[in-house]
Image (cartoon, rainbow, N blue to C red; front, side):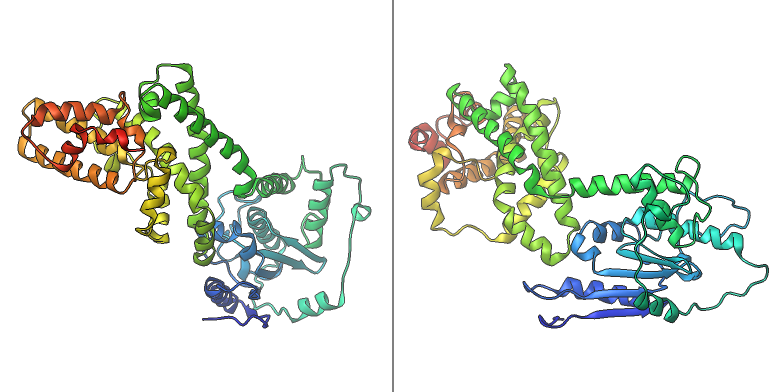
Length: 457
């Protein structure tokens, strides 16, 4: 489905038709994939809520999508409140257990006194519940429910524009936020007998909602705001990598053994980088499909560089605990898996890029961020062989590891650091050389015994 670039489309519906209009708009938004395409606007009147917390978050956290929905709800209309808090005739205050159906988009709440616009979904929920309770308190006995006519509301909106300020309050409220909330509530027929926030639980709740909403908006998910700090952390890890190389063991083994203060500082850098990229991946997963693809492309390089630099440190932590096996199956974080999937879906490197990798191999990171997990598993296999355990299957796994390593070397996909004297890979090679003996030959054993790895830079 395509939406024309020159057409401003408005989708509207009343009551259940409003719910259908919202769902149809979501389908349209998902289909928009051309820059400059005008976005549809959905306007509903008296529509019941649709969707749970997951749908609310997916839409509310995407500011562009959230602004595409305007829900008009009258205080006299029961339908918008059907699924949020069933009326309890014995209740004399707002029930804190709000139902599973959650609002999203912008709400225009109307009464005979005026209208108020709310965007924070938590505040909308609280106000809808308060409206339900207020109507229930003032409802005449045996009054029959009837479908509300929004025609009068639309006419009033078209003919009246009013601006109210604190001069309309019957008493002075010093806090601007609190004064604004009081005016909003009065406009929809709530809180006509004005009370301060300390004595009015609804105002107090809405103040907390607004503080949280504003704070969330200020923080927002803008990866570029935190990017400079994360670049600093990556630069510190690069420095750590360089210093560790000068110590002839590489940054993986330096971190794994942690023999100095500099090794401990890396824990802090790793934690901040991991929190950032976990948040990044989680946000991308919540994005609409088209925007997700664009976002992933923009941040692919940074995510790949982070994964190749930091995941080896997580692998070191994993195997540092005695008895731990099979990191890829039992210990790997989901965000690494997704970052790797982004790279795979972006396309494999062309064979001509092997030449470029050869030219830059001395400064490069090992491309497979799980390389050191394979090394640790191979060390475990060598230990099993020395102890005479699972001999046939263990030898098979070690041959597979040999083939894997040789393929990485041919592709210039591993860093020369794996050949440093103090590295876990060289420890594996010493163990493996003793196990297979001098008569055993393979591409990797020939490469290692002839010391061709010394030319790998």
